[in-house]
Length: 253
Image 1 (cartoon, rainbow, N blue to C red):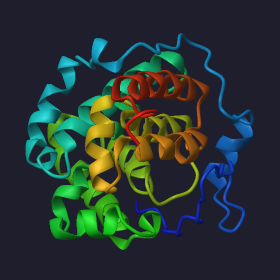
Image 2 (tube, rainbow, N blue to C red):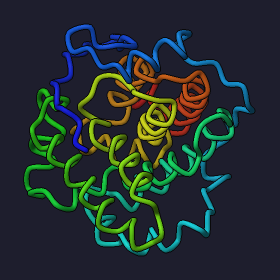
Image 3 (cartoon, rainbow, N blue to C red):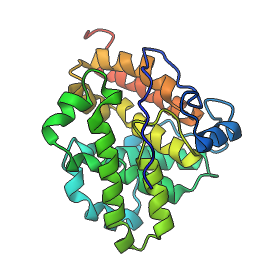
């Protein structure tokens, strides 16, 4: 089922997304906001803030899924972005053991595979420039990501209901301003956390045509306030401190 698309409200530096979209009521988002009313959402489980490269997501049960989407990892740096995001998702699932970890893992692995099925010449020019949060190509890549999920998951033994749950998360992960479930929130946070690692900074800063110092400033003022869970905030803060020290962004600016 496709999520009705609503443009994301303009977010300036330091803007904190509200838990619900008051202009476009969403019962699922409202229910999630009511259940997790404290933001960032406190973590009942352990929070690991060590460098993400020390704990890659070595989940052999997902190897067949990775192999099914190798083509989709060769676009827009997905072969870097997706594995790092999945490693963060694993950590978040340990911090929030009440979440459906299987759903978070698969949704995170597949969430950006749709970039491989849009006009590649538009990815950087539209998806990472100007008012990029509202770019039409971002809606397109979400829809294409759902198509990938529906194509590859059934043959790997995933149920129809599970596939649609994955698609509910993928469809809107960039363009819907609020999360609809804890699993949705963890996938969104994992999608943002990879940017704080040195590999994420190196790759993503080039997309936005920023030097590392400017990009890390943006991470602190724009992306940290978007994080939904306290575990993600703690991980981001630790990674940002390490990355700024490593890249000497206080000096090279």
